[in-house]
Structures are given as C-alpha cells and as structure tokens.
Length: 218
Image (tube, rainbow, N blue to C red; front, side, top):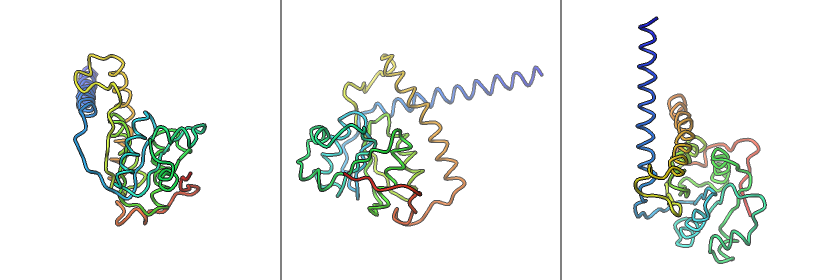
C-alpha cells in the first residue's frame, strides 16, 4: 500500500507538472503579438466577442480576401445597424456579403453554425477570426465539426491585452487559466476523434450537414 501511495503521489505530481508546463506554453503563445499575414479563403467566420474581431473580419472582407463573412454567435437583440457601426462596412457591402448567425451560444455552437454555413456555401477554406487566447479552442472545435475544411487562423489581440509578463496581471492570468482549462477537453476530443475516425477526403461540401442545421443569413 505504501508503494502504491508513492506511485500515486508521483503520478499526480507528474500530471500537475505537465499541466502547469502546458499552461505556461499556452499563455506564452496566445499573448504573443500575431505576425503579419496575408490570409485568403472562400469565406471568413468571426466568432463574436470583442468588437475588434468583427472590425478585423470586415477589413479582410473589404480587402477581398474572401467572398463572404459569417458573424457567428450574434446576440439576439443586436441588429443590423449596430453591426454596421461596429464593422465599419458600407451598407451595400454588408447586405451583399455578410451572414449573421444567432444560434450559437458558445464555441461548440460557433463550430456547428460555421459547419452549416460552410456546407451550404460549399466553402473548403475558411479564415477564422477570434481573439488570440480563444483561437486554440476555436480551431479544435471547428476541426471536429468540419474535419475536411482548411482553417486559416487570423487571431486578434484584444485591446489592453499584455504581450509580455502576463503573470504580473492577476485578472489576465485568471482569464488565460480559464481558457486553458476549457481548451484541454476540446483538444482531447479532437485527438480522440482523429484517432478513431477516418478523416474525410475532399472538400467541405462532401460533409453532410447535421439534421436541423441551416445556413445563417441576414
């Protein structure tokens, strides 16, 4: 029993050390300023949160980096006028090329909503716009929902987000730790899915839409 107890304590210590190391790596990566990029895809999906996400997705759309944009997880009381102001898009561009998704209430919901939209539009390459700290979990959930799609991450650094010495900011450390603990189950789910399921070949259009899903629209 004493030997078993020592093994148990050692194992728990090893797991804790790995989790702590993983958190440090996670926090260091997501607080690093994004490198300049030139993303181009079939569509853009913006996962709602800070207003800078929508503005950045709108900038990419206006530059012609994709033909349409989905704003996923829009609050049910947020109307077109408010989104026009946040995005900065001309109304004509907004009306022609922006779809609104009101069904998603979390990251898993964002992934389901994006899948429905991508399948309906036959999009195989999607630019993903969300906050830097939210990007790892978003990519994991989107990869589970749309395994054949090519996802291009385009992280947005939230206003006031520390790019160094994040550990000196208690509120930021709590935010990063919370996001890390949410990311771990998504990463585990993705790993198991890839291990036990054959990855579909071809374009996202070949993935059947789940029952009841509809493409989001204005």
